[in-house]
Length: 398
Image 1 (cartoon, rainbow, N blue to C red):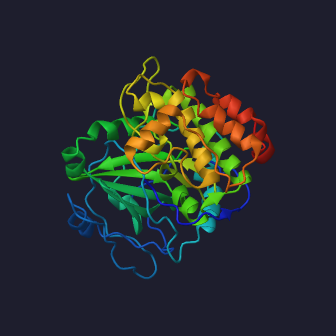
Image 2 (cartoon, helix red, strand yellow):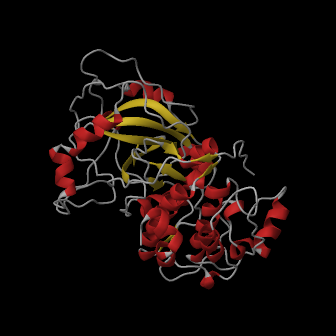
Image 3 (cartoon, rainbow, N blue to C red):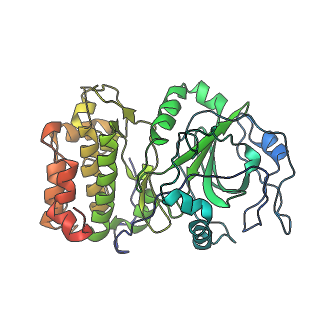
C-alpha cells in the first residue's frame, strides 16, 4: 500500500510535447568542458562499483578541461535497461536548457532529426556501418540519480557530443542471484526498438566483467509518482494531458505487439518540459499471437483476469490506464484496501466508488468507468480514450 500524505489539488497546466530523444553519435577520446559534471576516474569506478558495491564515486573536479586520462577500453556489448530513480534533479552547475539547446543546434542532432540516419538496437548507425562500441571512459559521470535493487543510476555526459544521459549501472551478480537475467534481456530487446516521445529511449548498452551499463534518455523532471505525492492529486486538465500521452504511447506499443503490463506512477518519468515518459519495461512482453498467464505488475493495478490467473492480453493496459486516471484525480488507487485480500476482492467485484470529498466531472467518471470493466473485450479502446469528450476538452487530442 502507498501513502498519500497530501490531498490538496495541484495545478500546473497542461502537458507540452517534448521532442523524442536522439541517439548518441560520437567518437571516443574527445574531451569536454565541465558543466557541473565530475570526470570519472575509471580505476575508482572499477573499485567502487564491483559486484555488490553501493555506488560509483566520481573523482574530484579538475579545473579547465574535465577529461579522464586514457584508459584501456572496456568490453562492449550486452543487454539491459530498467530505470527506477529517486532524485532526478539536475546537479548544481548543470543548465539543462542550455545543454538541450546546444544539442539541438549541433550537426549531430540535426542529422538525426532530418531522417538521414536510422537507429539500431545498440546505437544510431547506418546499416552498412559497424555497431558503435561504448566504454565507460566515453562518459563524464555526475551525481547519483537513484538507487535500485540491482544497481544505481547516474547523470552522465557523452564526451564528444556533450549529450546528457542517464547511465544505469547494474551488477551482474545481483541479477544472476535474483534470476532476472531473462527479464532484463526482454526489457532491452523491447525498449531499444521503441521510438515514441512518451517512451524513455534506450540509446545503447555495454558491459565489463561485473557490471552492465545502460545508456538511457535523461528525464530532467524526475518521477511522476513523487510529483503526485507532492501535489496529492492533479487537476483534470493535467490528469487528462498525462492520460492522453500515455494512451498514445500504449497505442504505439500495441501496434508493435508490445504489452506493458505494469503501468503505474512509479514507472513514469517527466521530461524537461513535463512530457510523460514510460520508463520501465521490465514486465512488458512482445506477444504478437499469444495470451499470457504470468502474474506480474503491481497489486493495486492488477486487472481481474490477472488476479484470477487467467490468460490476458493488451486489455490489461487499458485497465491500468483507468486505475492511473483515477489515482491522478483522487490521489489513491480505486481499489485500495487495508489488506491484500480485501484489495483482491474489490478488484474482482470492480468495486468502483468515487469519493464525495473529491469533486470530479461526469466526463472523468465516465472515462474511468469505461476502462475499469471486468470483461477485457468491453473496455474502452485506446482510440476511444483519445476520442473521449473529457480528453478532447482538457487535453485537446484526438
